[in-house]
Amino acid sequence: MVSARKVYERILAGSHNVRFEDFCAVVEAFGYQLDRVRGSHHIYWHPCAPRPLNLQPMGGQAKPYQIRQFLRAVEEFGLKMKET
Image (cartoon, rainbow, N blue to C red; front, side):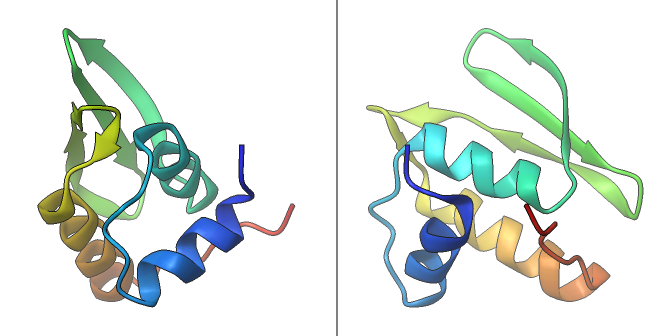
């Protein structure tokens, strides 16, 4: 698995070719916690964000619109990546 920081840098550079597993690692690095999994739906919540993130893989990849939703939440709520 690639480090969450490197994947995040790729996302910021405009790449939408992100493995779902790597994207989940980035989401968790920003403090989101996996609440539940129902089928393919992975529901993440963050104590500072009023809306949960609902993520589903598409052929092992993260969906581009869900990447955009995550980036908007990071900006809107001022979320920071945890240092590891």
